Image (cartoon, rainbow, N blue to C red; front, side, top):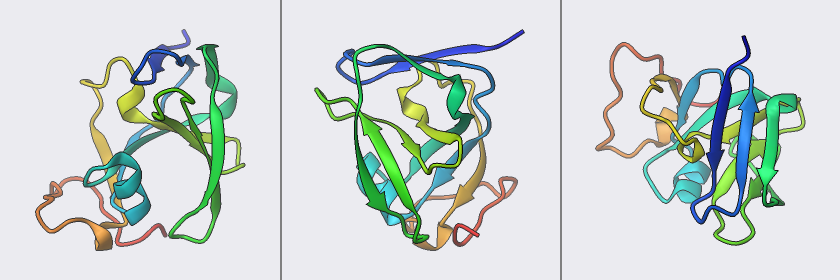
Length: 134
């Protein structure tokens, strides 16, 4: 049976569904994720791009250069600016986990770019962490 997950932007203009596996939750401490989330880190779920469907509203996009040197396309709500996903042109979308309607069941499976984490962020010993994106 295919799982269905729903989410959307802060103002409610964009609503989406994911039909399939949402993958594992990863936490990224790179400076771009800190800036984008206006927080200490970003939370992302990798999904197959064919599983993502906008069911109301529309998205705008722009491109950024990542700390790793790759380019990614960022999709966001044109009304409130909520970032919905990143696309690195590899058939995988990185959904911003906080845009899902239900996030309480998610548990981080890894932390990335920990060389850039803020000093007061504690990473549990039982969760893998990586100094950079490699």
